[in-house]
Length: 206
Image (cartoon, rainbow, N blue to C red):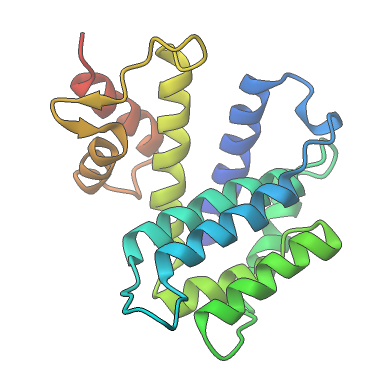
């Protein structure tokens, strides 16, 4: 199995685990993941900038974070409880390897959103087009995905549902701590997700 294929399998497993934590029979609930995709696309466009009547500079870091969030929803749309992760990963790898791009990032993003609205599915080729046009590769996606997924687990384990979770530690939001923890680790490590969780645990207020 190629390194990229292995990374996609890991992300599928993590997504299923996260969704199961929220609802045990989540894939039979009919959650509207496609809607989450196009709403995120609209939010991302604000971070990228689209208003011709004022000067705007793309917030690339924020755009990458939004793409990572979209991938969570895209994976959720693909998992059906029947097809193996290896098969799903092979399909996704093939689509991600053939990016679909329009003239610019904004238009490619609209392709991604349009498929979600009209066909209620995840257009991985347009997603790959967005990645390419923002200068993001599979390693960036993996690093961002595993980090955010682990933070979501960490939040659930530390009182996110009942409102007792503390989001700002030592003057920084948890997202900022996450970025620092991830940067200090080797993404190729077999226990990358576990090490991210431990890094957050060490920083979280006791």
